[in-house]
Image 1 (cartoon, rainbow, N blue to C red):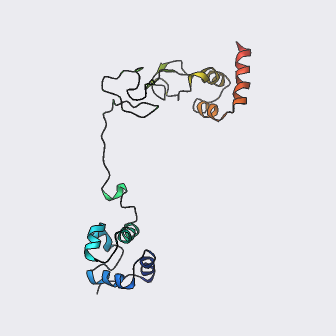
Image 2 (cartoon, helix red, strand yellow):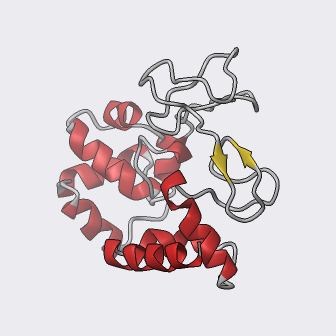
Image 3 (cartoon, one colour):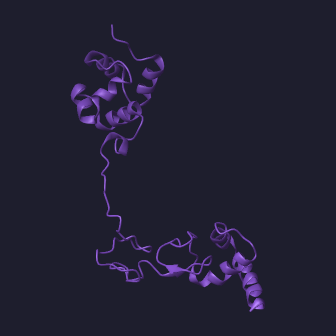
Amino acid sequence: MAEAFTVLETNILKSKGLSDDQIAAFSNVGINSRDDFKTVGDVATLRGLIPDLEEGTAQTVLEWALGHSLGSPTNGTAKVVVESPDAVYCIHCGTKQPKDYESGDLCISCGKQAEPILSCYWCGASGPGRFCRNCGAQFVPMGELDLAIHLKREGIAKDQIPSRLAAMSEAEKEDLWGRVRRLR
């Protein structure tokens, strides 16, 4: 004999909008446990087995039984996009740049420099992107380069400088600028 829904599962199904007759109809078509819904798989099949089941209720029941949203990647509906390793995206608007893109070019969508050339506060190298290709330090905005260099001289770790600058208030930055100016 096939197993039946537990009392808890029956109460959950009722809370999802099913009637006692619909739960009994599940048993009549061979759906006797939460695992049986994996075989059913989708809303259309479930509604084909139980014709008086509303679409919204069927979707809610399947999402509960399968343990995920029916639109989520775990049910095989996700699209896989394979990008070329040399694809460049604008850091301002996210638009993919054409194949003939070179560092320093303007974005085809927003008109800003898609990959600004920045200087590294740690090793002095320059290049595009968010991180220095020479030492791996995260770039800071050009307006804060002198502040980052000063923090380096004060002995702050390379990985802490960008986060410390981002966390500083304007008053703290102005105080740091004062110390930078005194050293010049």
